[in-house]
Image 1 (cartoon, helix red, strand yellow):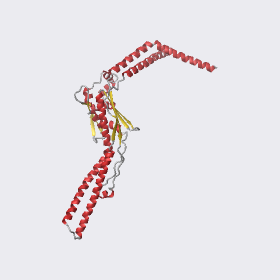
Image 2 (cartoon, helix red, strand yellow):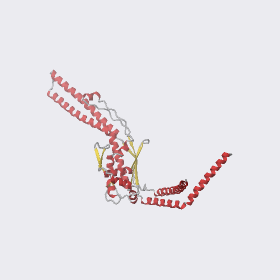
Image 3 (cartoon, helix red, strand yellow):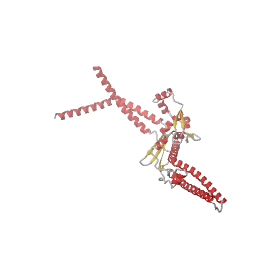
Image 4 (cartoon, helix red, strand yellow):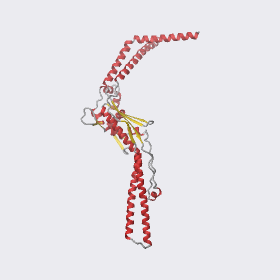
Length: 372
């Protein structure tokens, strides 16, 4: 019975606290309304003056064309000729981790900076770097943000002595060091924020999306990114088999030349020695015939190996099936004005309530501090 009375008393105290809290909020309703309206107008300002953004995307699937091809039957005969030729390159799926590495590589990004884009108001296509260095205007909101919230960063960048350029190791297409300027580095930072890559290893598809202030330009940059990504992946995938093909072609050319020389030498000896009766002549003929047979065998096997490796390169070359081609976006992807206003309204209401409750708590704490 006593426990039930305590529970009832506790519930009454909680109800009284909630009523008192609601009463305090109702008393300060004007302050809450003013702060909420202020944030709502701020959200409306942000929504109106934010630059429009358009997003273009594409989705494709890389496919392997086949399995590995056997190495042929060159074997010991090729070894006798000083040739060590292995089998074909195993055909495997391209690793999903390869694509993000390609997109983040400096050569890939530098090629995107030089992509010609169709910009509204320009009579001729301009490159990505030229657009953001000489044409693009960030707008009022970005300028305000830069010199208010971003002012510490601006001051730090002015004080800090940044190097004029830096050297980074190249990606898949270059083996030398690449030097990029400070301006290119800033452009690459912006480019990384505009390009989004999604690799679905389970389903096997890759999606690229590009967001830019220009609708046509976003589609052109997305298409260029797709083409470059496929080129880099193709080069990486076929590099080993192409190197093997080059090696076989060189050996084939050498043995073809040696075979032709031995064939001519044998024919010349036979023409000059018709009706051979001496043992020395017959021995010389057998020697030339043996050299001819060996050279012909090696040459024939190399020809087969060359055809096999050509097929292997073809099988190692991945195919890219485009599931969703790049299209010019008709509607902007940002800003979502209604969502911005609602978020700012909610934020203003929460902050205003927190301000009222915090102010009351601070006054109570101050009185208690003074009384003690």
